Length: 309
Length: 278
Image (cartoon, rainbow over all chains, first blue to last red; front, side, top):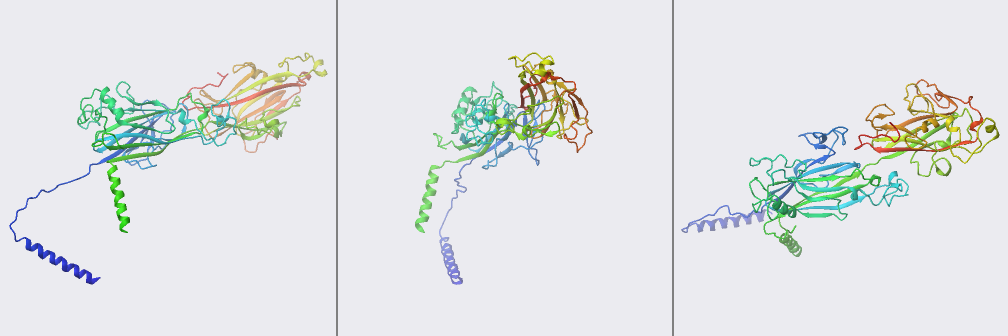
């Protein structure tokens, strides 16, 4: 070991001498410093605010998230005021299985809710995609009212209460829709980044006249669903009469709304996801459970005209 | 070793050529689960101060075919040889699984029939039996009281009565607001909770509620016993039954009927009235 080290140091010394010799020539040096190839970033961040039956999930700094009544909500409250909630969080990467927009265990006909999702593409323009996957429509067990003949529940009718139910009915009854919560001023001013404030932007209230519904109300397909956000944003470019092709308006009118439907880097996009279990829904949904993954994808827009994700 | 290294370099290269800069965010396992409103009933029944096994059962759905009466039925009344002065006491417990609910009871008579004419009946002045299913005298002479019980099958001081005085089944069902020959009893509706008297108070999910019910074939008087832990319907049910005033008119008369309990989610239903009640 020692010997090898020694021989290495000998070689190093030789090289150093050689270098010393070359400095004897005339010379001039021109330096171009700081040449850089750096990859840009496409970093997608998601935040969420959950609303349920006129309650909002609030997370004060340093305290646990709880349900609190929104303005104009009258008791009785459900969910109970002050009870724990999980659907609200600040800008973050979603860690699989940790962040859930929806985690509701005791739905009743007449329940409705809304989740305001904001997407931040940090750094660069990107194509966006929204997917619903791994849809499971579980029946769990036949609750006694599901077994009654008057209930439309084929795999529970005339079964004993408590029998395993293979096929749930919640998927067939829960109605979802998505709208672009862009507020009164088209595009995303992002709370006065450059002085323009749009209080209706990201307020989780659907302003029908100015906020386009980008996924019309309906149930979730059993095999999942997939949406290119560019389809919706392209349409909004037209309906909102935007004029800046690439959607970069420095947080002025139409910021984030490009002609080709790309997501503009560093703009924050607000989407409202609305859900509703109609009051007319019957006993067939009792103890049923609907599960799904929600996936947001962003991929670079430059050099990628065909939207390869 | 060298080959393996080359191979792994190659995969890296392939990966880079297909990948554009991208980021995916997955929110896995979003869940919507529906709750349940599942009503279960149990009944503890005493006939003339003795436990009546054929009308007693533990918490059950009443349509599961496992009841203690014939054919697996659950019957609150299954008494075929009543005599004046007979009495009974039942404590029904109502349990709404999981969720708050409004709840109502209907007592629906299907017949009050004189099934045949016995000699003593006729000699006491009864009309001869006809095909009429409502020519009996039993409903007129069976008197009832209902109260919010603490679960011991005994009417005690301070237990809230569903209505003030013992009332005959005939009178209870005569008004017919909830349907022909049908009496409606409120357990909890939006303006009244029979267990507390409060408004806007549905039954709490997962809690047992006890309805005390006493009947007397004859004249019933209420003699509530002092509240306490050792009360027992086989010793003193808190009511007295006197059949002395009755004659033979009711012989071989028969009443049949249905007792129906319903529960309805109270969430999103702020205003609810039980059928046939004010």
